[in-house]
Image 1 (cartoon, helix red, strand yellow):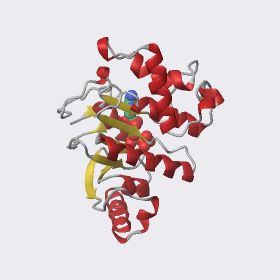
Image 2 (tube, protein in one colour):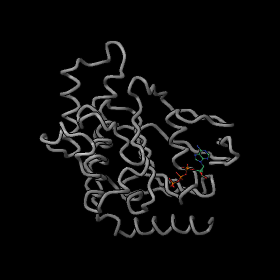
Image 3 (tube, helix red, strand yellow):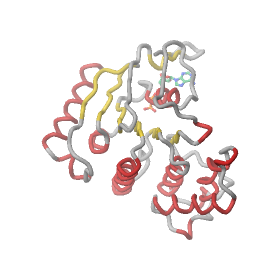
Image 4 (spheres, protein in one colour):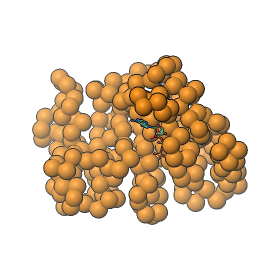
Length: 243
Ligand SMILES: Nc1ncnc2c1ncn2[C@@H]1O[C@H](COP(=O)(O)OP(=O)(O)OP(=O)(O)O)[C@@H](O)[C@H]1O
């Protein structure tokens, strides 16, 4: 598939990628190689110039089948933490839409799951730290229990400890609920620790894929194992060869 923008710039020219239902895939690659554009295409936010893209089983974003964590928290500044999380529930239609009380309860449950304290639920984004805002954003993406979860550098702005904690939480959620996860990350250790397969992009296309074969759950220390170090080295090699 290809995405070319109106100003002539090309995000990717000939990108081929298949993701199986229930798979945890990481996408790694240098800045500007088209990772965000790929996620936007998967989410239906960006049209392809040519080629095809199919999600199987088909997901309906408007029915909460798809969750997207954007680069940066992208919260609504005038809404409290729980009101931000409840937004995708408000957008559900018909019988799928929970009542106002239910929406607050479900949003609060997800905020607890991502480690926010109840005293912070009523705070607006500008009253929360960057890490807390990112957790709210992750809770918002999960609140409809989507079958496909797309994450664009969700932990980039966080310190190492929080990054690891939220990575472990993401792994847990994927293991418990068997949803498809596509995680864009510059951090090769993170990619290899969390995913089953790392898709390596460069210069607007896929230049290789590395399967990570170790068992779940994977603790953060797993990246020191021989297999994980070899995976990181292979990805780095692919990036160097093609840069
Ligand atoms: N709306 C747009 N109009 C024109 N060009 C764009 C647009 N969005 C992205 N691009 C270009 O497409 C290419 C891929 O951008 P994209 O944001 O997908 O890269 P990325 O790999 O996610 O980068 P980063 O890691 O820095 O977020 C870049 O050259 C970028 O300048």
